[in-house]
Length: 232
Image (cartoon, rainbow, N blue to C red; front, side):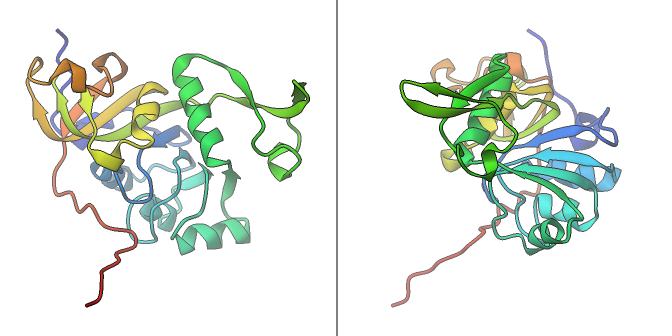
């Protein structure tokens, strides 16, 4: 069995260059590839197209890449809690493609499944549908949406093995499984890396065939985007 383990994020991100399209898993700050993002900051690659549900917050996650002006275009479903993302969008400094969340998820899934396009009713008759092909099915109008794929997909999992099999924990199983299938090179960072054969095959969410590189991450902050506590 092929051992896909690399030592660290620096080795895992070899080959990342200016102008590439990247997928970054997570939702808000949940399940984001923290180590990969830090390495992207260190590499200082520019003109990136980032596909992610949103862009974290101003001082964490993809927000850090926006602060350093490393991102040329964001393909996301919403701005979220990131004021810098909003500012760059409104000022025209950042190219942004906002996509209905379900459509974004399905476009990524389609990229991983080798389906070049599909039809969805979401967005028909709105700005989302401008310039897109539409077609009627059973008396209802649908938009044609194309797949999304990336040069690199960066995902975060709870556990993984040396063959690249992944298990996500709780709500961190959000965009990560879909993105893992849609990258030319998929890099997985995990909290716990175990030898091949130790994971229960029935619990694996992403089979190792989709993963090219895997490493055990470190110093995870796992920030909470909006912390709410109950008062007495």
